[in-house]
Structure formats: C-alpha cells, structure tokens
Image 1 (cartoon, helix red, strand yellow):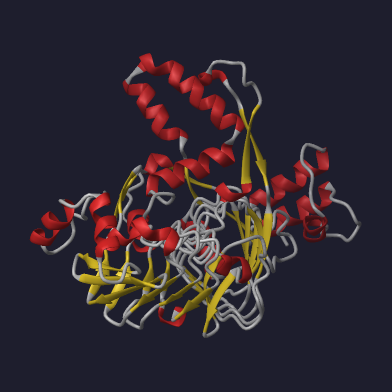
Image 2 (cartoon, rainbow, N blue to C red; image 1 turned 30 degrees about the vertical axis):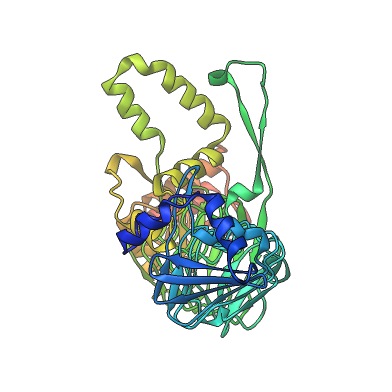
Length: 466
C-alpha cells in the first residue's frame, strides 16, 4: 500500500490508514453492502467511487508527495483503471503533481470554481480524457499538466477569453483573436521535445563519446490581435528559430524569451512600449535586435546579455589544476553541442524540467545571482539615432546600428567620427567589405564606390575645414 501523505492534517487518520494493507482495502470493498461503492478519506477530503465515478468532496487540496521513483499518491489511485469519470466538488482547491496521472480509462472530469491551478503532470498520460468541465476556472496551467491526453490532441491551444494559457503540439500558428500570451504558455514546447541525440562514436569510452544534436526547428506565428506577451511566455523554446512580433504588441514581460538560443534576428514593432527585464536573457545567437519605437523602454538585461557557461569551469580549473581532464571533456562537449549544453545547463540550474510550478521556476531564475565574470554582452542593437535603443546600447557596451544615419556615417553607428574615416579607408584598400547600405552613406561624391576622396571629405568636416 502507498504511504499516507506526510502533509495530511490528521495524524490519527494517517496512522489508521497506513495500517491497512492493499488486500484489506479490497476485502473492505468486497464485504461492503454494495461492492461497487468504495469510500474513504484522504487528508481533509472525502472520496467515493461509485459506478466508475470518483467523487472528491470537502475543503482543501489533494496532496501528493512525488520524489523520483517514490510516489505517495491518494488512496483511490489503486483503482485508477476502474475510474472513468472524476467529479471534484466545490471546496476542493487544487491537486498536486501527478494526482490524476496514468488513469488509462479516464474520459471526463469536472472542476469546481474553487479549483484554480493545474499542477505539473496532474493529468499526465490520461489517453482517453476528452472532456474537461470547468476549465474556465483555471488561471495557471503548469508544465505538462495536460500532456498525453486526448483533450490536448484535439485542442493544442487552451484559450480562455482570448488569452492563451497553454500550448502543446506541433502547430505553432496561434489562432486569430488571442490578445495575451500567459506565462510559460509555450513551456511545454521546450527543446527537449525537438532534439534527438546521436552518439557519433558509440565505441569510445563515455568521456570520449561525441554527441550530435538533430534539431527539429520551428517558427511561431503570432496573430495581429496579440497585445501582451507575459513573463516567461516563450522561455526555453530553445529550437524556435523565428517569431514575428506583430504591430499590435505593446508589452513584452520579464524573461519572455529566456534561453531561446536559436533566435538569430528579431524586429520589435513601433507599437511596443516596454521590454521587460532580461526579456532576451541568454539568447546567445540573437545577433541583431531591431527596435522601431525610438522611445521604447528597456529594462535591465533586456537584450545582449548571455551566460558564459565556460567561466565556472575555468574557475574550478584555477582552484584545482588536477581536474584538467574534466576541463578537456567539457571543452569537447561544448565545442560539439553549444546549443544542447546551454539548454541543459540552464534547465538544470532552474530545475525547469523537474516537478516545479512555474511560480517557483520564475522565483528561482529571478533570484539567481550570476557573477560578473559569468556574463557576456554581445549583439547588435539597431534603432534610430538619439533613441532609447542607442542609449541602451551605449550603457551596455553593445554595438549600435542606426536606422536613420546621416550621410558620412559609413559604419552606421549613429554618429560621424574618425571611426567612419578608418572604416572607409579599410574598404578602399580591400581589407574590409561593406554592405549596400554602408556604401550609400559612405559615397560622399556619388561615384558609386568608396574612394579616398570620400574619406577625406568626412575628415575635413570633422576637423572643421568644410
């Protein structure tokens, strides 16, 4: 018999129930006046199984205690194969991890208004679950809470009152009419679902084996109706290569695209008023972010800040030189699989793949203290001259590209200075190349090419001769 949960409020009931064996429970059911009725108490709640229907009543939460292979689940779990329907009556406030998972014949569940959050894996792998009544009461959908159900196969998006709460599957075109993307809505579309690992050298010793990631990349398409992207909405979508932010979006929350390491370029529309703290934190391949609103507000670490996972290993090697073999192993893995390593490290550091609620994941990330030597700043921020984007780039030591440069601003960094003269001369002698746009702003005499006369014209202006 499964242990009685240590969180239950009544110790006397716990002792009494834990004294029963599984065979005693079966005997109780067979000797009762109606063998089809099974009833009992779990913590402060009462339950009854009648005609394949489990009814849970009382006030409080359905507690579980799950730790690796040790599952401490409600008493009725031993009858999971015989339960076709679940009715949670008013007063039941929630159910913890795995509370109703692996019910092979469960088809229907009714949720009361007092029940407002779905814990991680709460309905995990219930393949026949097609009907969920009261879903409109749920305000928080946690990791994999509906994975493996017939319901989510038919409804890859859970949308309530034009708010997208939960997404799972392979359809990444969000339906029109959605106005808000809730926290971790795409948390179930993490890269672990879209990466297959291949061992290139299976005959080698484990520390010498080389892993090769086979990525299933995808693009997310947002409708023009979306106005707000909440905190962590797309966190850990590590194989998402592109997302179009429509002109309707006015706000992007904190860590909204945390660890989306496959994004390479993105344009933020003129409608966007604010970019939350660490919105693109650890998007290490996001080389160019274009901002069309010259007054958009940037919060701390909003763009260009990444975790340097190699730094802690360098510190360990400095303290313990004998671990050089471990350093070689790390360098080998990192060189072969930077995407995989970044994803796995970030995931483990915040316990994202563990049985954690999104609130606790957010708290773990936000309270993590990254040392300065573990942070890198890189990327090109493109915006208008004298905009908040130019100010943010300067304050965070990022390269800036101007959307409205002046003639003579050959390197398009928003100002005309000696660096433009040097850049033009380098292009002239052939040691550096330039884009068509750079050529346009460097060609001072309209000859169609960069010559010494162009750089001299700029230099004369800088020293006040023209």
